Image (tube, rainbow, N blue to C red):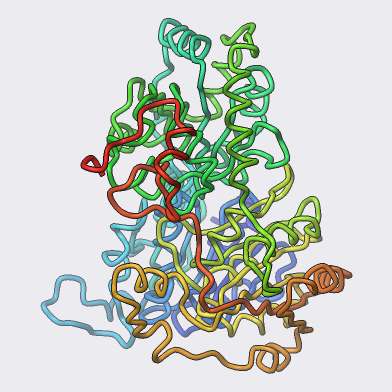
Length: 589
């Protein structure tokens, strides 16, 4: 009977699933797996310099390439260092497989009332169960096929997410009989969601055609279901304006007249005004969380009927009560809707389209600095013109994320990758590394703040070592700007740990030490020249953009305010002139 070392079987399985790269940091408990990867041509090892970065890289690989990302780490601290990346994949619905090494089963404590038996033994499975779709410790070599097949199926089915398999060293080195391996069989009869009946679809069509102020709200689920084409077909047919959440920002091309920006706490004012005044909201693949709706959900789109479509039934009517909640895949929903929609009278919503276009003209996402300093939104606007048509933009968490989301103009074939739920600073460079391996030949842009950049700065060596064409942009305001802005608003400008106690290195010197070419600008009139030089080739590079430490993300929504009332506040008369519905009186805020 044919036999094989279990670690070899694991790697062969990854190859069979078209996994091209595994991101890892070496360690004693994964040496058998690493040995099974040695000098293979059909799968490649990418050695990061921190396990957190390896997890983020697998996340970026999955987000950008559409295939499942894989990261691997040793037991104990290696495994626990993966947790932040695992959590990000869980909250943002990114399918990834995480493999951890574990001490030999005879060194594992199991139910013994001790803290630890083996060196670097950690019960990683129970630690990550709340943030994975499936996690298992493999103690029977003959079940390796079952666990691998189950892990890959669960990671991609329904609402995607991360899975973790913990493999002890003696299991990795075990010889297995290939014919005795037990397969995993999904229960296909269990429907993930029910098809809506024709009467329900006709009701939706009637709502759409009778609406005079409709809007489509695009969330991250649109991309996950690969529904961009069906959405474009629907918008071309109906002419309905489109707004997005942060995670849905690359779900619809920004150069379309129908696109009206990002909604929410740090959303574009014109987008928030659009959704606030709508009489119908078609929400596709979004959680409708408080960062979109504000902290008073009853004030959100209060003049509208809401049709909410999501693959996760638990998200429906969870935060916002809606007229028509649908537990459904977004792409499948749009396919059906496009079949039923029939002829649409676009003239009916012409006044609405004119009004929302007026919002966009009146409250643009960027402005030119009169002082000569670099205004962050204006920089993002200028950057848009230099980005390759198929660029993948990876954006860190913090003020830089919101400036990019507010003012970058994303084209049809460009991607905007960023974290939403976990929101880990230090993620963009590592995600860019994963994206670079998933999409060879494309220029990858990693946008960072100075604070987040320092959290995984060691991955510059990974960029250099693998000669990755990653363009790194650092917005340097020499502080933790987002928290500083919060402290200014709510803590009387006591800038503990955001200014006091925080400092930056000489980034030009540090990045140069990693042998990555560097540039730096501080004045607005130098932006175009710098970007032209920066994008002159497809090699890696680092552009430091010095901005005022007092730069803020505006507009911004405060607690207990409806989304149309962002700071800096409009006068009551100006706000009223923008509204199709009544503004809320002061005692309702």
